[in-house]
Amino acid sequence: MPTIYLSPSLQPFNKYLTTGDEQYWMNLIADDMVPLLEQNGITVKRNTPGTTLGQAIRESNAGNYDLHLALHSNAGPVNLAGKLRGPDVYYYPYSSAGKRAAEIIADNLRKIYPDPDLVSTVATTKLAEITKTSAPAVLVEIAYHDNPQDEAWIRNNIPLIAQNLAMSVCEYLGQNCAL
Image (cartoon, rainbow, N blue to C red; front, top):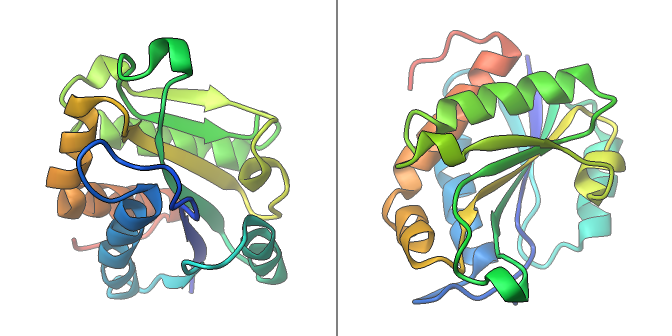
């Protein structure tokens, strides 16, 4: 049975423009993803609010997971605050499985994000959830929470985003999922 470690943001200090924060909204997406994955035979372990990043990485590394999937929303640097848009899907450049998962996720996000040209995959060696996890890892910055259009898109599309990400996980794992 395939297994994933689902790691929604542990960052309640990243406030959204209107209401809530990154941890709150990413946990709602994870909450919707878990039953979709489980009903399709995928075992899910996930972090919970209050877990530290180090604890989440250790939990992930303690299991034999087929994928470590981190869910986040982004914010631009001070000089570009509110100006950037679009999902960024990060992966470790030395992991062909991580890159494959990132490409599947990005391709599927292009089907639901309002401007598909703004969805990108990004190789990185700077994110702990990408470089310190044993399983192939992907960190999805779903959209920019400091941009009014992106923030509204996240808030108004939680079930759609969750279903899209669950479908991507199924595709990556080679599961024929009914979502």
